[in-house]
Image (cartoon, rainbow, N blue to C red; front, side):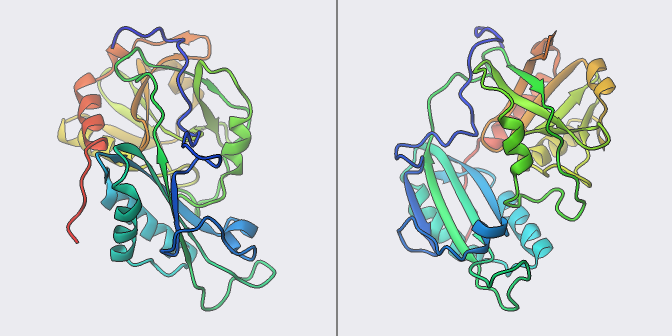
Length: 302
């Protein structure tokens, strides 16, 4: 991991980075090609829905089954009818195969409902699929790692919503407003007890030289697809990985840190606030295995 200075600017993966004014290249709404939804949609009014952001490589998705499993878990948690896996796969193929490299965003809302919070008894969920072209940027995995910071905005705490990728992301939006320095790639967020939950868009791992620790997602945070890959890869490699509350003091004592999500795969951290970190002290074989799995495109069997 040499070549790029730790302070080199990294493009923000939370930016859409597409070719149209809205960022996306192509969109399907309930299987039809248009980019509008009814103003009565509960996703717009209340954030009543879910989403998945899926990496596309060579026209195929990465970690499709994991994304579908989390979407199904979220639908059950919110009381939404599960969308047909066959329909989602068909629609994803329609707009994803044209991308050599990019992103597929899948949004599921409860659909149109009456005024007020009470959801309709028999909802008609709406499917929205958008494709985004990927922007060329330096790869922190091979080029020296990323610089990150702590955020002041607290992460929301709600055990019923923890882990799933629901549409209510205002805490991350406000946290991301806290910096515009292109040299800072991500910000870490803490809960109301001061424990570190993860990044605005990522999961965090601490390395103590022999084992991994990652923040629990039972009260807050997101059960990331690549987070699960990393935990499973560590188990196969005989490396302990503990899911628990993570304090700032634990982070201060860590030998190394890295971030994961579906878009980036793995990001070693080279600087946190004023503290420098050496990415080469991380378990590099493990990180390579995680990255390889996270970036392997494959359509599941129909």
